Length: 543
View 1 (cartoon, rainbow, N blue to C red):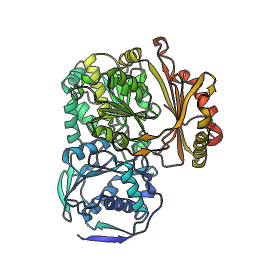
View 2: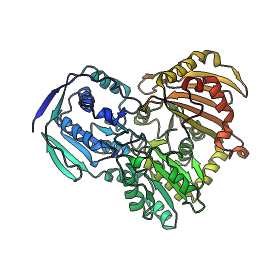
View 3: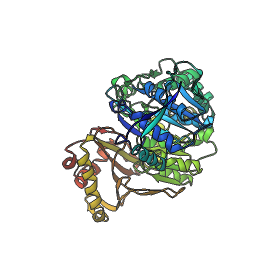
View 4: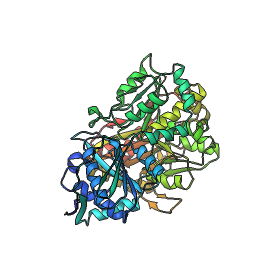
């Protein structure tokens, strides 16, 4: 074995987005593409001698090949140890867990999250820092700057490591340890939730369906839900990770998790349904013929957090991304704890969690988590719901309906216009920015605008400022329309339109969501001219 220095040159477009660098698989397969980015990561980090790195991915196509490159480059840069998940698989929450438990300097996550997989699908890479969370913008921007000036990369010529066998081997002087992908994460879940109560729930005939979506959370769900908690075999469906996710879109929402929704809509439906996404950090919660929005899920868990042993002492605060509904704000007010509104991207929660300012966090894009790690965590949210169901003996619908009766209902929906022409999407946002000054106080039919702005966030911990994080149009009655371009796609642009209306009257808590939001939907089109700028008369996906 020897360490080689390979001459290279910059490859354009390697700026990380909201959750790392995501491109088509074919882009990552270009000569030097992955190597350039990984070299830029390691150079940005500086001297890594004596340090530990965690590496894993969601099992999608190109995962194993990419890991072999990263292992050989980590050795060339002098890491003392690399912990890698068996088969190259570690869910994103598990990566964060392993980093924190083993005191690693950081980790590399190989995933494009909820994006499609396979040879023609997407691939991604991101770096997580020592707290287990995604690297902040100061680091990702430094990495990007390195990619713009790179001239060489370092890599060992060692043969491939057998990722299927647990144990230790070496590349150069670096110890490569293939670890059980589930063990550390499962141990942490036992510390947080009342496994005895959940076992009794299943032992009493409680039925559940967990859809692994042929993605990474399947093995975790099988080991914990069917194994440790005693749910019947077959409770987990689509539980084997596939490189192409079975040709499906591993995004846990009612559109893409259609099989689960069909199961839960049947007359003989299980008591509880849930799904997770490609890399295991998102979740969808479903009752019998009853869908729970991610915003409501965060609020319900926050309001009932003390039923779980890990949260018995109460919450320090609740944080949500700006587009997420304000339902959790009402819970925070009732509990007398702070609520925080951040830009989209889990990295913005990291400082709040590290500073002990927040305990629970959530994003409307089916992401929920807490201070147990520094990533959102799909299976954690499912176990939290199971703990709540076991503690109360109530159904999902009963818990949510009672929550609405106490706090009011925040009707909420997201309309996605996917893969639209980038130029038109940017021009739509620019046109809205021009209108902001004239919107304040405007009479828009049934609504009067309280304020309109381009959301800007000043981190209360480190003072960093993030600008242009989404355009908000907020009405005097608290209703909102938010426009934002997503940073997680790989083709064109994705325009997301978020719609929210608060309803205090319990008699009006069970309207169809799109009906309840119909006036805001029309208003969003009128204000933004979506069809004119994008050519789309209706959204691609409505959730």
